[in-house]
Image (tube, rainbow, N blue to C red; front, side, top):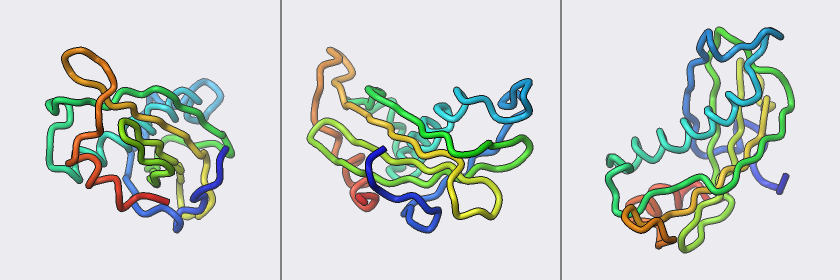
Amino acid sequence: MTDGPTLRTDFRALRTITTRWEDEDVYGHVNNVVYYSYFDTAVNGFLIDTTGTDIRRLPAVGLVAETRCEFLRELNFPGDVLAGLAVSRLGTSSITYRIGLFQGESDEPAAIGHFVHVYVDQADRRPTPIPEVVRAAVAPLLA
């Protein structure tokens, strides 16, 4: 994955996500697909809290165009996951996030994610500029 924040202390925003019973699989750890849900929850929760806006009601909405995950160690239930957020690219109509997932006291991530939102017009679903309220919220996260 591209260079960017890796350690917990490198991320400018941290969000807590509580693991659920259903997140763990038969192998006794959080299933890989759930990590992607954590990415989505962290990004959209951050946007809602930081903008004070219901982002689903903006004229332009962010759709996930790309996501990747580098799995480094297991996450487990029960326990909170800390999602660190950084922005590696802020374009005209897209935002690329870097997300670190941490559990326990470790400064080392369990996973590093790559998550791209492309903003589209609510009505015609064509790419459009990022709403200013969103741009202002994520600009401080530029790595």
